[in-house]
Length: 363
Ligand SMILES: *Cc1c(COP(=O)(O)O)cnc(C)c1O
Image (cartoon, rainbow, N blue to C red; front, side, top):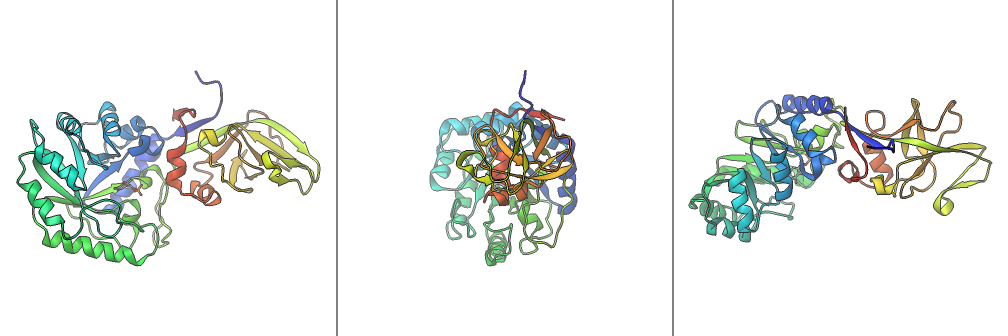
């Protein structure tokens, strides 16, 4: 039972619309639906159920998340993006048919030394310029050859990750060229995977995906454009609508201020609505005065500092605002990218940061 009206409304049909859009945009290849971090905050179960008809596999961050994907009833390929280090995990991969990423020597040795009842499909990660995870250009062939000669390996997908795909950057073309060149010269793999959401949209990183090319899309599937490159305008539907009720209304005289630190002052007689949404719910405390929200079809702005359980908005001049009115903090009418920009962060951070005390309501 939920008494507080605060909630994140999750639209399965929006996720499905976005998945169809991504598939059309890809025109070929296979699609891995990235559902790490509880389906980017939408709930792993709802995300998996919505995506299942439209994707060829799912990606989780680590073992617990991969098991949650299986618990949601998904039977297809599941990739573990951080990979596995222990023998116990590799046994679980075998039992649950999970595909670990192998990005370093320890992980490769664990695979070579494991006693598995059936071989695993491995995603071998090469570093093409991000320098976070993956084998160097020089190490990649040896790693592939060792995997190829292990009885524990059924096949390999060669992968790499982009560092700047959301923007224009010289590393985009360089990473694409290096991955292209590597995948041309390396042997011992059966498929490859290079593009995240932004990589699919960026002209500097795109290519015509072949049957054995896997895109790994996250943010796009949840209806948010990751890209600041303007050539493409994807037709997306935001799948999360973060909503909270007005729980108080206050009339302020000119010069009176609101909230902790008195961070906003009325320049004229004003009406402030207090909303049941705070940083403990995942709304960013860094959000500036004027950060957009929507009430009764009107765009309004944040007024004063975000508290743990509440925030305040300026509803001066909007008739009929009442206790219990829903305020949209982000969703179809308030672009989460704008909220992120007003809080010096990114959409991924806001969606995955909605906390456990906010009920997810499936539409
Ligand atoms: C999270 C992740 C993705 C998905 O990224 P989006 O920008 O949300 O599409 C793809 N690949 C890897 C390796 C990731 O960690």
